Length: 142
Image (cartoon, rainbow, N blue to C red; front, side):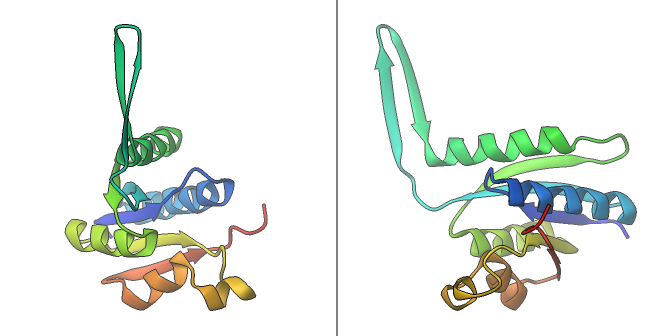
C-alpha cells in the first residue's frame, strides 16, 4: 500500500503513543506519514520586548506541536510531513484526509469510554465521518 497515513497530535503523551502507532503502520504499509495538529481559533498576540517583536498565534502553536512530533518520528525510509489544521480536532483530521487523499487516519482511544463517550471524542468523530479507514490505537495505557 502506498498513500498517506494521517495522525492527529496535541502535545499529550497519549497523542504521542498514537503517533508512534501511526509511524509503525506507515512503515509497514510503505506509506508516508502526515502529522496534524488542530487549532480552533485565529487568536493572535503581538509581544514586544524592547526592539524585538514576536507574533504568537494558535496556528503557530499547532504547527510547532506537529513539527516537534514529526521530527521525533523521523525514520529512514519514511517520509514524514506535518501541518496545522483549523477546526475541531476530529473535523480537521477528516478534512486533511480528504485533501491528502489519505488511506488511513490513526487516532488514540482517549475519551472512548465512560462519560467521555457521551460527551464525544476525536476518535468517535473521525470513525463516523472519515473518507478512509480509521485505526484507533490503544493509548490510555503505556
